Length: 264
Figure 1: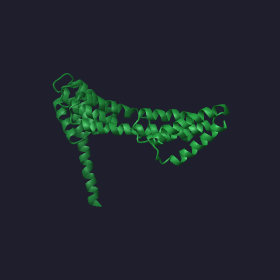
Figure 2: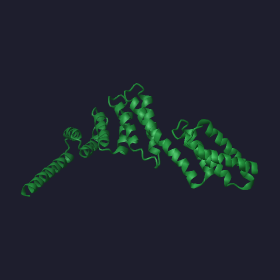
Figure 3: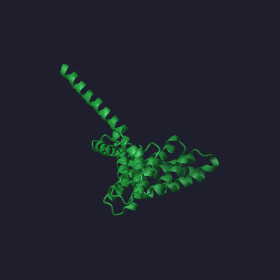
Figure 4: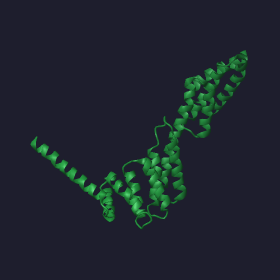
């Protein structure tokens, strides 16, 4: 127990000493010392302390030969600390401020990745997902021969896959809520936006199903016209997926629609 307390006291002393040392550096007017210490903190991955020092040095070295290096480390500190909102901003700013820098390509790429990392679950609002795709495309256009192109394309594919999933489930939600007219529109838009979607079979089926139920729940004078439209959607579906897992249900509703057309 005594040894354990000694260890705690030892590390507490080190922490206090380190904090005092940092405060002394922070208050110093020796900017060369601050610059070197900031880089040391960065190398040690103590990004919070490094950021505080580089933050002051941005103004001190603005327009000087050290401006590029200070801005680079400053942006990288936010990236290393996983503060992707600020990192994305400062990394892109660096790439724009110093387009000829050896770090410009890396920073623009990392800036796009910040939006990728901030892209939320498909159930949530997808502004950052669209922004990430836009930023990766910007990088590809600017550095078409970069060895990072394949990685960018893979990330774009993952982001688009997320948007595709969201589009499908959002449009299907109208069907589940019983708003069949809205479901038809949303499902057709999903196909339009993602013609090669992995959900194509499901979407075409739910378009037919929604059309059938929309007709079924219509006023009498609209039923025949809407059942005929439902049959058109059935033929579109069955033409592509003749052996669909939804075939039995689709055929049952098709037969029911035909009978209703004959009746009305």
